[in-house]
Image (cartoon, rainbow, N blue to C red; front, side, top):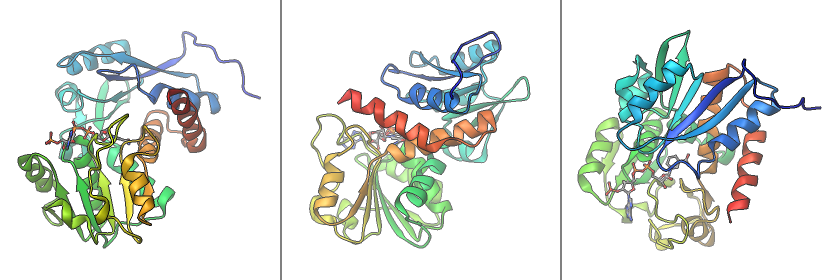
Length: 282
Ligand code: NAP
């Protein structure tokens, strides 16, 4: 039986910083994981104004927080407050997880790409090795996905973005396999990823024309609320396999959990907690 949960003087504190943060699902996911393993940890969410990310990390350092998640708009800003970056965070110039190494050193990592790959392989049974991929978007999430797909052996990664200059910047992170292209090229690739906010609550815009979707493809929408985004629905109607972004969200959190606690993350508990919370938001 689960022991009574109590925050005490010994409790280790982890948190997410972002703006806006009140809709963050990270506290639900991590607190469920801490409780299920009976760890003396608690996870909070802090609203941090744009431009104050690095200052917040200095505060976290002084407060002795045991781990930090970082979300919009602070992922690049916090870099200057850290002692060291993982190779992935260095490549992306963006941090989503901060780990306290020993007593004082704060290390920035980025688990978005690893979380995305885990979701592809473990949840969808899709190995990107030697497969053709198209990513819509060129922001932080898209870049993590492009670098991850290149690292996983994708044959090509076509990047399509509203602002052409940003697509070029994303391509530059994985020049061996990535190139810019047009949305029509989605027709025929093995994997399509939406890394734009199109399709979030109430937005019925399709980031990829339905006519480009077909059986044999996997379509991943990084949006996870609503669960059945217009793109996921269109993909299934056209016979393609489809998933929303919840898998990536859970797996990136699982990587962070392991980095902070050294424990195996209870994936099923984390996923169930997220689904229960999202159901309340519908
Ligand atoms: P970001 O850095 O702000 O990038 C947003 C991207 O979307 C940019 O490429 C932007 O194009 C494009 N975009 C925005 N509005 C658009 C529109 N109306 N039409 C066409 N393109 C548009 O954001 P991000 O952090 O990469 O996040 C992107 C999406 O992924 C969000 O929906 C976010 O919730 C989701 N996400 C999910 C996870 C997960 O774990 N599932 C993790 C991270 C992000 P421009 O360059 O032209 O502005």
